[in-house]
Image (cartoon, rainbow, N blue to C red):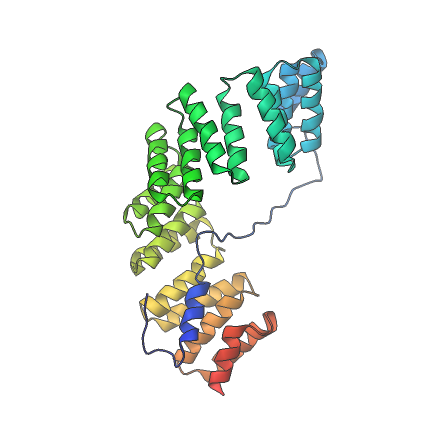
Length: 340
């Protein structure tokens, strides 16, 4: 997007454009729990009852370990899976669970060893093979990861996750063509593969390929309340200059989460730079600031709009607000200097 002859200096435009949030930015969510009464969930209660009757069942211990793992209760998960392995160390899936506990507690070396043991016990355990491939992807050993993915595909050539992970490896290797091809194969195998559609959207958006829009819409069909998919769609349309389509996507996002500050910010950018509607831009930047009172980029952007509207007093107030939040905030420093 290019906007000429608005500011006396180019840095004002550059800063407001730079602050327009990309698809990697997420809002922090605060969750509260009612701790006044604690009730054992039905699934855990059933497992506990079964284990009371059969305390040496490795199968039940493995199930409960996975339950605890899904609840991020890593100590309890480790206790159960360790006991399961002590009862029967010949089960590939037990070592797979152990590897997951190690991985979730940032013990990648131990996770790798457990996966290798799992695969040694059952070299057809596709889940374990793909977990090891995922671990190599995590530590950016992409060629090794692809080797294990190919191993899994020899066992199950229709495995959508394998193609997805291959696509992620190619993306890391900056091989966009093969990344897209792999992701497309993933959704051919599983037409409900949300993450694959998101990645296809991102990959196509980087190429300014209009297919990005459709891929994001496919993700939205799978999860209509996904703020990620709505945001990515809005950002793509915004970057391509389709202002009204972008506003539609951001408005749909705000129906899901009315406090999504980045949507308000980007709508402000669109109103100001794309549609030349200063009052609407002010309103959107103000909404973003209301949600996040220390949103320095929103203060700066609003100050830029006030400056364009010849409202020197409010522009100075917003630029000074930037400085109060982030001392020596360079765009505001420059703006204030230009206004002297």
